[in-house]
Length: 226
Length: 237
Ligand SMILES: Nc1ncnc2c1ncn2[C@@H]1O[C@H](COP(=O)(O)OP(=O)(O)OP(=O)(O)O)[C@@H](O)[C@H]1O
Ligand SMILES: [Mg+2]
Image 1 (cartoon, each protein chain N blue to C red):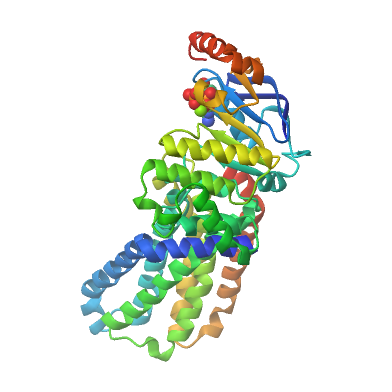
Image 2 (image 1 turned 90 degrees about the vertical axis):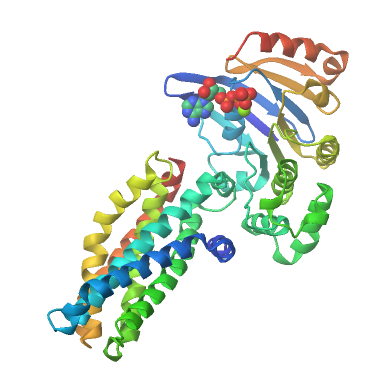
């Protein structure tokens, strides 16, 4: 899958120069963490709301937003700048285009994941009870799934007229049950040091990653011809 | 070699191509002309595998284009309405990307990329981003991009647009070089004068098929000029 790597490298190089996508994803997550910081400071201090719950939920809001913003741009940018056809003219399997886009999206969203985890820790002076590594691990597994679904949906909606609307409408219900709910639970358990209780969640998230990955990989021929 | 046999294409109920046959041999330059909306771009997109014909067969380099699209794409170089280049990459990086996507050997790129940019007259700007290029420079880069993997077949949709006189001369020179290399060239253009010096044949697309064809001696006699004018006067297809 050399072509996928070449495509991902190209996307990341362009992103490194323009910083268009990461900067908007980054601002979204910063905004969410700040808003939560001020909305829930008292509830957290008084013990009415546990920081674990708040961390798990707000982090996944950040990650989902980052995904939606990032996915939207990945194909829309190629389409709007009329380079998508140039990609389609390359003698590579369409599935390589899917993998390449998913890979560059994964890198970008995961960077924002790490930043969000860092921001939350800083703003709430929270060290994830020493389980930050597990939190990052859950974030990675969940993000892989998010990005695979997101890349597929972004490609499906890129030719639609109202794709800005279509993408979240298709994407949010798909990810709500397959990724967000199990990931929030797993993240909370990870912070509590009980990740072993979430093994089933994680297996199911990874299972969805496989399913969506396979669907994207196999169907991309038809998706892009649209 | 480019060959289309009985190609039809309709969009909804609008029939654009019907039972079209065309053939461009190795080392041949064919001009595809015809009124606006005749279906020239549509035909080029079908030949380039960007569009599926409703029926009919396309053969590129001896193989069926639909059966093995990847092989076909490796053989084909396309200059389309847009340049397919990335603004945030330099001229050389753009070429390197398409070079690699065509599985060309990485170590040979530096020489080939610089040589390609020299041919289109952009070597002095090779490390500038495409975003700062003028329209004509972008068109030159698009030509370089289409040629970077040494295609056996060239499909060009109004490639002279926005080129200055020097650019036109450069492209003419390149096309003659490619022809002597054995490349099959199909070039959509409205410019009778420019193509007269270059084409081995001119096909006029009208009513969904090749309505008339002029060989090089007919072109030189000036028949194409009159014939093309007549077809254009028939109005928008
Ligand atoms: N995607 C499409 N959907 C519907 N109709 C289309 C589509 N693409 C082209 N057409 C129609 O097909 C016809 C031929 O279009 P095409 O672009 O091939 O013409 P052309 O010969 O290249 O014209 P021009 O000289 O103006 O470039 C037109 O009537 C156009 O409206
Ligand atoms: Mg056209």
